[in-house]
Length: 444
Image 1 (cartoon, helix red, strand yellow):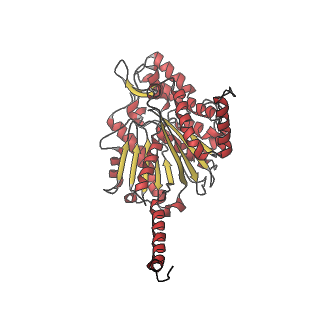
Image 2 (cartoon, rainbow, N blue to C red):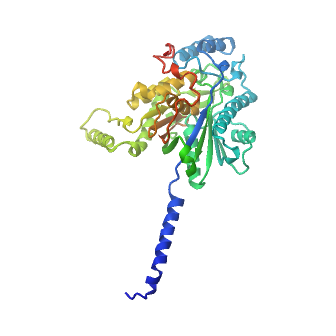
Image 3 (tube, one colour):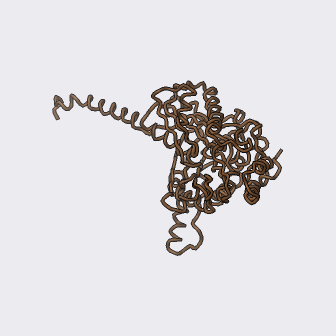
């Protein structure tokens, strides 16, 4: 080819342009990492504690329930796995309990103002630097919204992208993380704040329906604030990096849809009914979720064992149940929603985990009760306070909620976690784990 060809003359410019385009495309279109900088969990003051004996006495002298309803609630409480440190809002300590709108607002303010202030002060965060704000609270949906309450309290920017999620159940915490993750695909260089809680004050049930009385006994006061970022400059100070998030919704099935439902009883009392099939429904939803998550996280050896087991069963060569992959080869830690003792034990059995693997979940249920969507964050703080979270460790969060939903997230620890950093467990971490059931003595 003639060296004087126009193509030869412009070749260097074409190559340079291609390189620039390639670098530009990589920088702007590469998957953006979501970093968890830190999180804060609400620690109720001791005067809000509701020991089991006091709780039962309170139900009795309130004059709301008949003898049969009282006996049922006492029986559930004694078997619940919830200890004497779990707390309820000050308005629930009143006789009769105050379930007014102002009581719900007071509880929301106490929890969220505290955890957000803790997080902002610890990391010297200017509220105006928050680009995305997401809150989730299923049964309390005020107007103005919860995110508006926070924006007003902390003086956040007028162009902040805010979302208040309601009616999404106990798995809504991870759903909120998923929403932030999707928003961060579009909005680069963003910092997000996620708020997870459930309001106890307005949601006590005062009727006789057995399936609706259960919720009275297991839900307690709690909440969490989670600070997220997709800015590269925040990587060095972040605790975790989000690796996977899988959402499963089995609401098309009536049994699943009706397993957790807010409804009105025959006497006109509003409450949340929990079906006897709840554990079965949760197991079904988790199985579907695991089938999608497994190939992303399990080593090939475990995937191969499952495939071989599936083929054998399909062709009648194996009558036993399918091989359950060993998820301990994919994760060092497990955080299972502390929705109740049966839920934790069901997941433990389904995934063939050891007692130590579900220790964080059982301990959270014992100390804080079912705090709805925030329970997963109390469990993660438990692992940190115990000094078990190491740089490079992976933790699997498993949340369940009405609908019915199973949402799971996988985080990788990317920093050195100091167990001496103060969190919601620092004052009593030496008392855990609990020996035996909720009525047993604590380790000393």
